[in-house]
Amino acid sequence: MLEDKSYARYLEAGCFGFIRGAGGLWLEHPLDLIKTRLQASLKAKSISQVCQEIFQEKGLRGFYTGLLPNGTRLIAKHTQRYLLMDAVPVFYKGYTSLDFRTKHPNAEILVETLFIGGCETLIYCPLERCKVFLMTSGSQKNSLRQFIRLCGNQYSELFRGMQAVFARQVLNWGSFLYINKKGNEWERKRLNTDELPFSSILGVSVIAGIINTATMPLDVAKTSLQKYSPTSENLGRTIVKIYKNYGLQGLYIGWQVRMLQYAVHSAFAGVFINQQNKK
Image 1: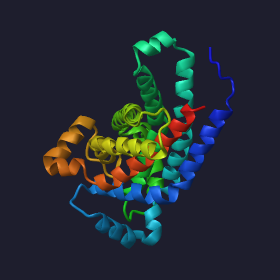
Image 2: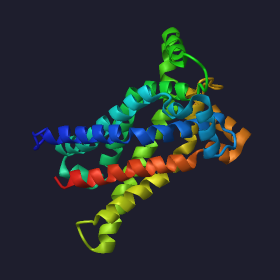
Image 3: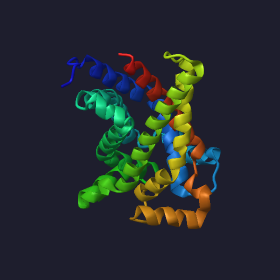
Image 4: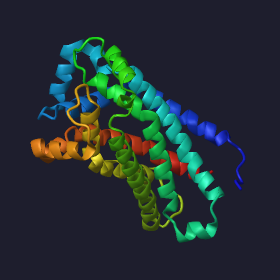
């Protein structure tokens, strides 16, 4: 049974996630838009060129195209994410024996990865599909109405690109949690201390986030599957097609923006996990 019957910490975690999502929205949304537009075109464009195109289409407000679905997604995602980052390990330890955890030290990472990654995929894939559709509609008018009509006629359109979203989330969570755990253990041995300084915690988390950039082909394929005018239905075929037409550059287009996003996300998550583990 669970020893900790107080759910105040879960409420605190959820509130932290809500503030994290809402507070970073003004910067994260434009970055997400730029990354999505780069991935949708798959042409050798610079970030400045994409920014110019967005500005020419709709002015400054163009950088917040798709804000409603993406803002809802980001705020809900961070609220749920930080709540689960705190709750899943507590429940796992409450319902597994010490002997099992000793024999299988990485089982907690697997459970947390599958649970959080699966929840994020099911809940946020429709919002992500809407976000990408609107972000890649360019100067098209009434694109939100078009999306609603499209999904009304074919419900499965809401979950287009779900395979790519699930694979990306599971790989990202698994690598982040594993690297963060092993990196902190290595830092404790190196510094010969149980209490890591903030710089070490932050550094390990950022490195874990940067390494996650390796999963970008899944993110690029997801955008191709979910964009305004998708050209494929299959995840594997989409990745192969992008590679044949654009090479590795196509599979990693927009990596600079994505790396920055991953580094920021991981920095907050790593610090949060370390603080919750102290409770």
